Amino acid sequence: MKFIDLQHQYLQYRPEIDARMRRVIKHAQFIMGPEIKELEDVLAARVGVAHAITTANGTASLEMALRALEIGRGDEVITPPFTWISTAEVVRLVGATPVFVDIEQRSFNIDPGLLDAAINRKTKAIIAVNLFGQMANYRQISEIAGRRNIPVIEDAAQSFGATQNGQQSGSVTQIACTSFFPAKPFGCFGDGGAIFTNDDALADRIRAIRIHGETSQEHRYIGTNGRFDTLQAAVLLAKLGYFDDELRARQRVAARYAEALSDICRIPLLIDGNTHTYAQYTIRVVGREQIQQAARDAGVPTAVYYPRCIHEQPVFADLGYVHGDFPVSERAAKEVLSLPLHPFLTMDDQDQVIGVLRSATMAVGRS
Image 1 (spheres, rainbow, N blue to C red):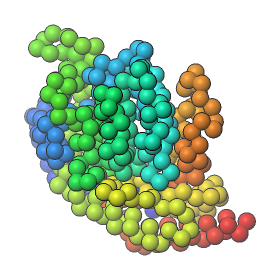
Image 2: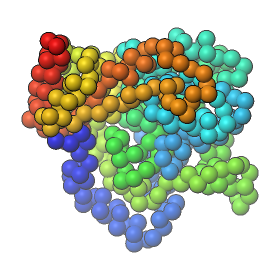
Image 3: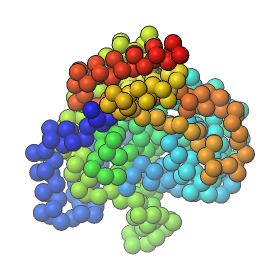
């Protein structure tokens, strides 16, 4: 059994993927070839924004977004401590300081009720993360940020394809960033990402930053090499026609897990108005180590995203946070467990996962 079955996916779509890749090899425009513009156009149309700008990866997307907003030394950026480290890492990379705000119990996303206390005159942006594939509460976040004219960056690395009150992830804030890492619900065959915005001036700045700050043979900004490979764009173009079917399949698998496991653990809660990509199907359990070992013994793969909060990582020790500062995040880090979920997971495999989880959880409860 595979946690994510990318090989099966390739075999399903092989004729389209191979044809798209052969076309790139034939025209040999491997950097910024025509597939880049084609992909950006279809992504912008799907998300419902004026501009989609492809990038080298999700981390580069976040960093370029901060650079485009001219955030740097002396500035602060608010973000949650329970997520992948890149969300805070990019803040440091542009010279700013990450300020952490705890998450909600029910959604794993940043708690809007705690934002006011964290905002001060140095606050120049809020990065809200759509953890595991469900969008954060952007109505409240944007209302709070809007009163202070603070831009909100939607970290949609795990939520491309999700919606909130009918709006696509990537379209609800001034700027949004996503990732096309292979394990994402919509992934390529390597690293990749994109930035979405309706702001024409911001889009122009991002496009320049992506190619070393160059505009019309002049370098107006300190930029980077943030380009997306043409071959990877070809892969995404081939996959895009199947993406909605894959999302529905992911949601069916998630619904079956919910029905079978809701009495033995805390299952993901879908917030009203949201749809979910289930980039990871993440439950909360007591006795995680014993349950993981039982799953390993039975040949069932599991994963933990994320076993240690960002504020507890050595690289951020100088910020002065200590264990206990963000209790909801810290508890989540001790309890979360992600189960196999992909569009090609068979019912038999899912039944095995469910059976192992139920047996292991009951054994932990008896011990």
